[in-house]
Image (cartoon, rainbow, N blue to C red):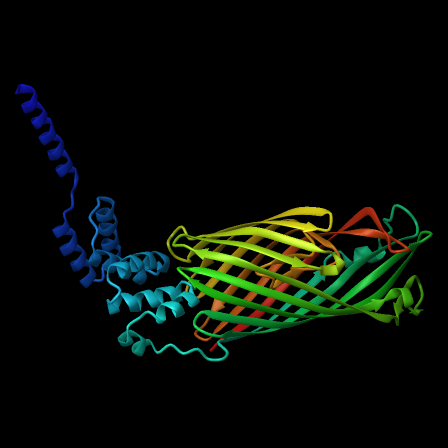
Length: 436
């Protein structure tokens, strides 16, 4: 009997201590969070809400109030988490429906907002009145590159052996026009046409005498990407990029000029390349994961590429977004790994993104096939910064990147020699997007 009494006393003491440690009650949390909600004291509401949930006190209206508080604080991803929890409990709450719809949109999950629109009550849809025009955005962009070592390469006689040839760019520009079309609430289609004029030099070392021959190329690209919203924040992308180009055939040239320099009036050679691929993305509350795969025949090489990309949202918002990627590339018998990392800082008015690519970027595909590194030279690394400025109906973008390039020498019979040379390239990026 004495042992039983002792055990009961111990249990009473433990229960008393646990009751003392639990500083909140359901009634206190409900009344306090409601008062803070009415006073729009979002920070204090979130503090008591987090503490309450940590202690196991959670209920429908706390989810709703915390979701609204996160929304008002601009933490849309955290707001989505709470609103989705509340929606699972009561899918008929018009307030939750409307807030969740806009949280999807403001966090960049446009297709998710479209899919959710179909689930909302008529009261809310009549208020929002979602329309899908034929064109929702138009963008113009330009990429201008410059070979920083061009003048030095023209003069340098650093070939180890005579009778060798190398090709290097002077500059090129990429002009693009893109359109975005929502085919339906579930499917989005983006396509773009690009023109790329290129100015390059063929340098020959004939018995120690350097001859530089200028030649030009023109390339046209058509890119298309279809994004399908699969529901529950899953997205499937299918894309292709078809490239039509022509360049001066210097094997059939008529050279003019003197003093070791010449211009050419050659015939023209044509080529057609393609990239085809897809990606699967899962957008969670604090992380976004993407796997991708593509095939291509860029510059005559059969290439396969696959990889994984991650974006992190540690603050529950898009304010601070670290990102990284690892890509495996197999090009004929050669395999290569490319690593990407960076950080994006985003506000309602502007964003700044710094990034770096480490690895051999040759016939390399990024950003769902919309960016292609198909120069004959290989980029050993790239470091860049992009800034975007937002207005009500437009986005203005400017950027800069620096690349260390590597290429091979050739024999007069166009056989690749293992001997390499280096040069540096600078890229300036500009563009504007109009939203309709």
